[in-house]
Length: 512
Image (cartoon, rainbow, N blue to C red):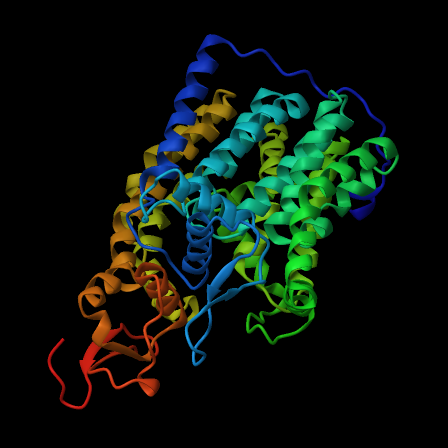
């Protein structure tokens, strides 16, 4: 199989010309784009910032916007050290700059960190469709864009402010421009590809250089273009790295590269250790509800070099991340666009899809179940979450979608079948937002707790608090609360493992 994927050396040849759109297709695509943009921005403020990472990144971006220092990320020191803003070297700055742009634009605190990510995701989907039209034609481009936009993983990371989406967008934009050039595209796309790869290096560091290796193998005979793209990437990325080294010296190199690049790959010190097979269920969940389309992937589909690049990027990246000691679900996000292209090609060239698309529609019945367990999964972890049975009425609700997909396949209208399932997926994602996000806001995010704590913050200390809740409080209160072990404040904020935080009186002092 690897011979089929990696065996050929690329020789530039014109890809299929972008097909002209008729009036009906233009109207449909405009409506689809409007629906997707609305879905991406619909629930951004319905829940406060989640997890330990989103509030930290949002805090850094807000601090950049307020201080005007866009070079050095700064975050509060970890207890028991005295609270102080210190340089924070774990990640490059692209996400922080996006968040800072949201605050500089005057967006509210609830949505400023997330709106730039949603807009970035939507802009990439437009570019994804536009370039794929030139590589594969209108049908594959439309199906791939819809599959990507409505995949659970892509959608979820498009509405939270973490580093995975900026890396996925910039890396894959660079791949799109590179493939366009190698398929006979204009010279300016080389500069665009280099700029995107430079931004990818600013999104999450050296991992972008690893994930681009399959493309470089296929483009190895285009030396002049590679030199130009590499030069542009260096012009985009190097100033920040050199500026940080000039200001902070070796501690910057040690923290960012030695600890959070090389040690993250080989050492379990960062406490994200997972087994080798961890990413198999993550990938299946990431492309939900399009899992049945995987059965249409066969090596015979990878006849053209662009398809081989997508396949090689997917397989190489999957093996690379699986070999890493530390694993988090978002690491796979840069591979989802490659998979979306291959799934769309598989749908177009499959003998029939009367089983795959209807089954994908039936899987949407799981959306209400996911909505009901999501708050518990984020609070106590997926392994300790109690899953509910699938009520039969959920299946009944999606039967019309499955029947419609089956009917459209029977009439040879596969693009319309994918669009129908994608429309159902958008409804499912909105249902999850409406039903789960208010609960997340109450029990997982620190936003509600911060509103309760704010009137008494001068009298409250922290006894125990989950790190996600602690970072969230730091964001909403703008400064850490003192530890109870180091203060005599009368009120205590305490959170037992797996429980909810609560206020209690210390030593019989007044009521909260």
